[in-house]
Figure (cartoon, rainbow, N blue to C red):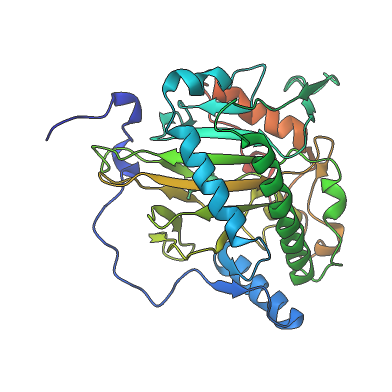
Length: 345
Ligand SMILES: O=C(O)CCC(=O)C(=O)O
Ligand SMILES: [Fe+2]
């Protein structure tokens, strides 16, 4: 044994990954062809959302050469000296930019990130205090190098946004709702994109690239490279299932907002990223987040006497800001989760 990771990265024993190769199962995360006949497509999406909350899509409309260019650009950014990356370091005033101390559940993740808002500026509540009605105007931080970074990031984000809206419509239809039922929550958005860079790790049995978590928004549209490492926790037996890299496909997962809207018909799945000793890995998630003033609760159409609402209404902006408080200060209490809005039955 040579190097050892810093203790900040060490997962509690129950969270450490078992690294033996998981036997191939015939029960894999579904791959959905978006060029399928619309009626069939809605059924496939509905089944995938119910069973896994995770699926991959092909024939999705995002040009593969654009994805290849953005992956190359992101890699060039992370390959720069730390001094250069720190010029766009994220802090409390600029919550977007470069960061290498991301924590999930108070344990440090083995990765570096670069974040940017889809909409510049983006508005969020100034504080988590319920009575504070002030807003903060938030803007992106762009590095000087690699050249053309901003233009390509913006072009890529707009293409993935189209795919995200298409998926939102399919999800809406699969719940028996009109295609545009959810669109209104996204006129103004708090969506952001992220580059996740996972360097090789000397102790992949002790640390994780990202600890177990659920994504917050409506859905996530994620590109991964060919290395692998993303795992989803299966609902029925609870074991961790790898999400197989498929060239040019996007991985889609349901987030907390959709869980609330659907009144738990679709659940936001738990997932994590394992790292390895040899290969670096890059992933590019698009976190499709509603507007700061969106009020979230189960859709009336999905609620009746047999199926009462399982969540009380809450404000999306305050939820996000409360969650983000743990980014810079270690919190004693567990971070806010949607189950804190659950109605006790
Ligand atoms: O890197 C990945 O494959 C997934 C990362 C992830 O879950 C996240 O950034 O929320
Ligand atoms: Fe995630």
